[in-house]
Image (cartoon, rainbow, N blue to C red; front, top):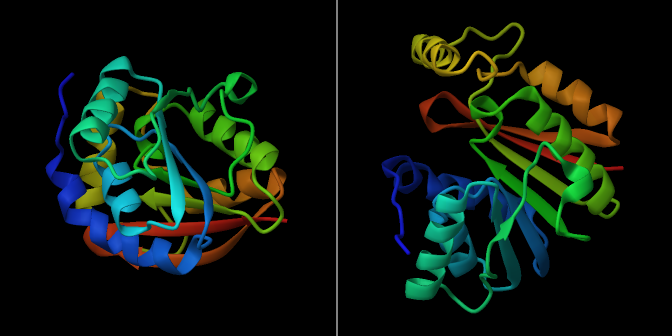
Length: 199
């Protein structure tokens, strides 16, 4: 097993942690959707010892990387990763979560994955439970940074089903699943933290 590494994780993990410290419950199980290489899961579990962190991903290489990080450095509250495809919430191998975290998935996946994410949050989260999203978003009335426009064009050239989504579209979809935007936090490098709560 190979523990993969991403420079972007080292740049954003602490600012994400700062937001999560104020939003996550002090105890409970946190389900991370699209955990990728697993570095965020390792970092968050290490710095949030009161919660149990469950990473997930649909990609076998990502699952292997998460497992390798966990074996090499993982704290006791970092659970083994599970294979989970956000686009298919009826087949999720998880039946409950006190909060959900999804970092940098929405723009590099088809819209069906975001639809499934919201359906899964509606099904799993308790009343008041948190769905935390991080990544770049387009916003009505807010000028888009040139770097995000270039990034969006690059994403769409790689896969027409990918691309930076409008925050308002995310909000509308969330609302259809009983989730309300409770906090928007501007983050470095033209990213946002979006915190939704289940009604």
